[in-house]
Length: 316
Image 1 (tube, one colour):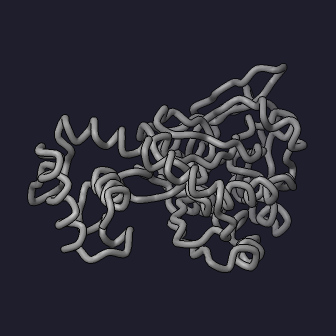
Image 2 (image 1 turned 180 degrees about the vertical axis):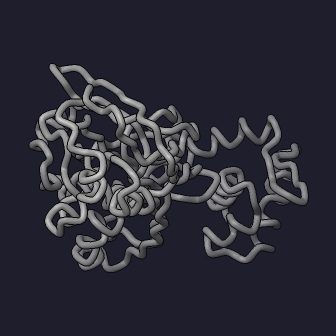
């Protein structure tokens, strides 16, 4: 194994905190990875990694060497790309919040795979925070405010939200006509994946955003459960309009307070700032740009997206 390949192995071990996971990511035998690190530490005359039964962590020298490895690997890959015209290939790991994978991503994926036949996708879907570097994920599609300064964010579009409740709920509690007219109403509590606190309802009125925390008897932490609770008549919710349109049409939910819409949520692709985007990741980002160029139902024009403010970041 040459020095640049050994650097790639070392960088992946630091990121994954595991020899085994790094070997799996790189498609190498575990023994090959171990031998490469032993040879590297012998050549440099320093210990780069601390091994325990639970995880592998870099030493101070390892942290410094990791940063230099990233820069050297990036320079080498840039130099090679200048002379290579091969199509992107390999496994791309993507994480998507909430129901976006099924509603906005999967319907378009056949075209992506047809365009890039040598790329394979591993798509995980969840509402929890994912450490991209530690878990070996290449990128994530995120909704809302992005607070992690270690991530690079590429804005895709803006998702309009809607306020809704079931017809049965409206029959029992009445139709609010104004955000201030919410006495006696309940909301379905949605727990933030970032803080664990309940997210208030939010309404735009006279150019300002007003937040209202209603009482709730049911709290959930998943996007599907959130919408399901509303359909069961358990309270008012706010969710991306694309997720609710079919339920409005089927009469399972009723739109509320449409003159006071919730703030729209930005959608971004994020990836680690410390890792140079691979050709397959760049291909995915460019493709996603074209997919989201067509706004979701009720979305503003793409030209209005770039300057839109960031708001809450939960996959509802």
